[in-house]
Amino acid sequence: MKEKQEELLEYWLRISTAINNERMVSEMPYNEALICNLLYRNQRRQPEEPVTATDLCRMTRMLKSQMNRTLSSMEKKGLIQKERSAKDKRRVLLRLNLERAEVYQQQHEKILSIIDTLLEKAGKEQVEEIVRLFGRIADIAESEL
Image (cartoon, rainbow, N blue to C red):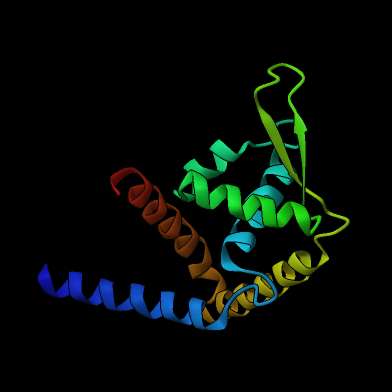
């Protein structure tokens, strides 16, 4: 089992290094790109239910102070829009400003094309298994860490 642990750690680090060195979104800081991705996904899946800074802190595990700095920077750049909840005035709802997020959207498409290339090389028959395993690993990591 120890050898498999070492092998898994090696692959994990190799993937992490490749992703970090390639900088998936080089035109903006990593935390901004991460938040753009979360807001983008949320707007596509649940457009009627925007997220809050608290939701983003939970999803990213960022400190509240770090999240506030990042969101302030994004708001100054026009990347996000804030609005008070009609139901609960204490809640500030966040949306990605798609009109100003073209840099993120271009990079998102670039990332998807990189993923397409990787999946093509893996073979169509293995894509479903790769997606299933990545999902399972992410679920375990989120629940255990």
